Image (cartoon, rainbow, N blue to C red; front, top):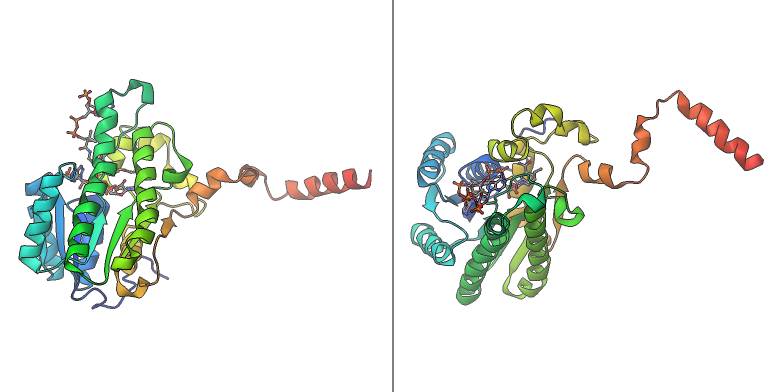
Length: 293
Ligand code: HXC
Ligand code: NAP
């Protein structure tokens, strides 16, 4: 088995137009590349136009697909509406919104200024809301069929996590929005799903979550039962399935792709993994002796 290979057939996304926020770097770039390989038109957006232009031409050269760079700060609703209009002018229609843009950094919460907390909430929750509202209104107004929204959240959207509280708070909101609109907008043919990735190394995340030698001190692979971090192609394969017509009956779901990481932290007796094999005979004997006593 090779999880770094393509899962879907080459034309799986042919005819679809997909907008990927934060598509110029990291996981957004990897998902964009794969959507292009599968025949989709993709618009990538973020605050940094030069980065987007470089990414778009790199990916067009690599895949032969059509990738449109659009500058847009998702915190600003007017900019989101303009992005939508540019995408419509270029591609005629849009079928999928992938809310991937995010901001995050580690900090004890009491050290945060009100503006620091707001900055993360604004990018993640308000940004996803702005895009969702603008695209949803358009699809409903135009009666566009067979559309979908895919939100990138995290597993701490439901567990919570210390030291990334603004991000956890915002991602929880995005997950609630996913599940709520999956029901409310199904009547318009709009599906809403989410992916909760575990650790997938990217410069953006690692610089802010594991700065300096923290990346050596806290080897995230060790927290994962499968003992490795994720490969970008694994996430790209899952995202491609979720935005394709093959997942037409999947709605309101959050799919975790983390090698079992969050469950390892949650299970009360998971720590017993530290017990060596040879000790289990002794422990079993002790437990059985008590039962007889
Ligand atoms: C405390 C901080 C801070 C830090 C910024 N601030 N960094 N406070 N500790 N490390 C404060 C600033 O002082 C300021 O508050 C406020 O936050 C806004 O900072 P700006 O630099 O003005 O904001 P901006 O230019 O908008 O940049 C946003 C950003 C930046 C989030 C701070 O890091 C960014 O652009 N991030 C985008 C990419 C990103 O974050 N990617 C990682 C996603 S990873 P004051 O009060 O001084 O004005 C992810 C993974 C999840 O989500 C799970 C992984 C396993
Ligand atoms: P990344 O490369 O830093 O991606 C974040 C993207 O968001 C950047 O391209 C950034 O581009 C864009 N962005 C930030 N603020 C924006 C704004 N106001 N408007 C528009 N775009 C903005 O990090 P990543 O690791 O690939 O993260 C991608 C997604 O995966 C995020 O939703 C993150 O929470 C999620 N995630 C990642 C991991 C992981 O292990 N990597 C785990 C769980 C979840 P600009 O700076 O150019 O604006």
